Image 1: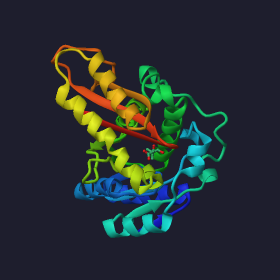
Image 2: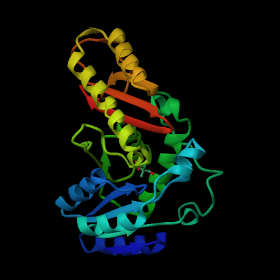
Image 3: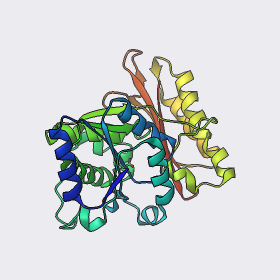
Image 4: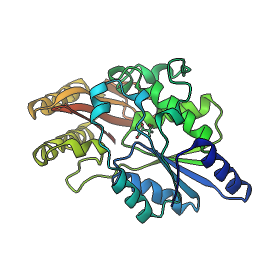
Length: 280
Ligand code: PAF
């Protein structure tokens, strides 16, 4: 695996490979890698692409300074896992390399409705920060394909919108959420959970499964309330549990039985905020 820290160096190297007819698959991450990330590297390798992973804990997307300070960092282990997975290139930039002019005058992306609901509502500015960093990364890494995990359902939609808005010639691939055998969605933030709270955390998966098994055409409000009560009684501070249209995240209170739905949840277990979703 080749490690690059400078934007100009990796861009020059990748442009040469592209000229030689190679495809580039890109997996952006914030490190603290788990098998979910590795499955994205594998998907890119399967497509026969040069696989590029970036590790950058992006300060611009943290609406909560404590969350940024506590974000796990396991760089030695990450490098080892990437080597084992056969990743070709790691981009490991500094903040000044990513934002040489700072982020004070950063552009604003017109994300519309997507930024006003669910994660957008509870994490103001978060998706602007995600767009800023992914846009910058895609300027540095001329990716043909970008691999993202379905666990961040709304983020996947936001990045699709970014690519559309900025006319970026990159195809987005959304790969399934990897789960522990208990059902708990793999997440870098799980590293901050004690063994006891990891067990408690799988209640989110159980609650989403409950919504999946019990959603019927008609009014969904009572069902959603039961789900919120279940998680609250299990010791979570719930931000939201919602059933939404899987295509545009419109909140669905009354289901016609036809539209495709997704159940989405965000809740704090102690200081750790967990999110998950399930297509119904
Ligand atoms: O999902 C993440 O880890 C981040 O939001 C991303 C896409 C790497 C941008 O910083």
